[in-house]
Length: 273
Image (cartoon, rainbow, N blue to C red):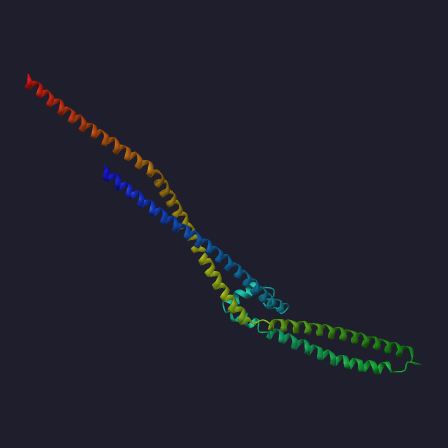
């Protein structure tokens, strides 16, 4: 009984040491998890900042393509996705060729209307120098109609030239805006950002798994602590049982020796008789 008690006491001490080791490992795990969560949060913040910068660059491009009929006009998300995949159509859409063509067309239109305006001004100047004094009424009416027609054409051409020049200026500004951003750079940054998000979500999954392991470890530690808390009382009970058994044994031996002594006395009394 005593040997079993001492073995149980050794097991208790061993269990307590293992619990302390487990608790220390758990606390280290909690610290590592907290550190990992901070790193993950910092990583997410950095990725979100990078995403905002990339979105801004893409918007610069898609704003520059406004009015060109490009499928990417006003669609920065589509542009980013396609550039990230290395889509040749997306790369071609951002090379500025379409805008350059529009600028050339606007200039051709300006030159054409400018030549027409020069001719109208020449005719108008000649007409205005024509003396009208003494001109027959019918001829004067025809003259005034021609003059009004030329003046109307002049106004129309001047308005057309102003409109074409404004369009050319707008396209030139859009081209400059487009050329300020590198499509290949956006594509590379997009791929890098996608990889970063992939690593982030992988890290988040690892942290979730670590969190679950720590919860399981905490439960096991709590169970072990409950057992360790119960053990001293159980050991005390066992020790009392051993003590009671020892007392019974000692009392038994005392009774035995007392009985032997009484027997010896009885034999002596019989012998004396």
